[in-house]
Length: 195
View (cartoon, rainbow, N blue to C red):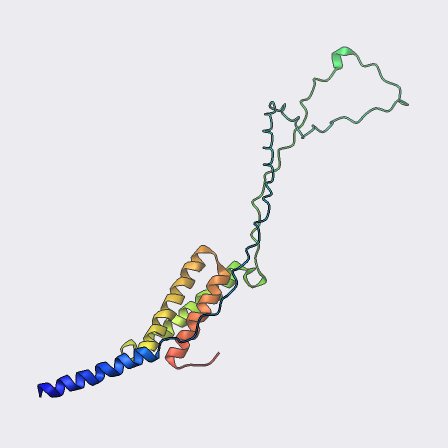
């Protein structure tokens, strides 16, 4: 048995050495001319930009004159009318000029889309969608659902909760969109497909 192993190993060794000998290259490599490197381009150095001068501080401006001018209580007399001499005893005491109260700045009005122009109506519609979705989810037997439909159930519940919080924040467009998604998922889970 030993001589047989030696013979097999010699045959395998001879075959391998012959394969190595035939795999060697017998041709001479072709001489390739060396690459000609172009000279590097000249360096162009741009001068640094001069720093911007620091503006000098300006002295405080005088206070602005008041913009409200008092209304004149007496009309001007024209030159054509002769001036009447009034006795000094009957002169009227000087009336303080009437000042108009400064207009109270109104807070800017909130821009609304036509769908949310009426807060109470939009809120009622969204609350209705949320309640319909929750009542539909209440009719679904969660334990009988597949894993995919359980995920849909949880998503519908999450959408309705998000709609509720968006409604509390006054974000009616987002609340309407997310409540609609939640209601649609709940309707699909309950098996009711009416619009």
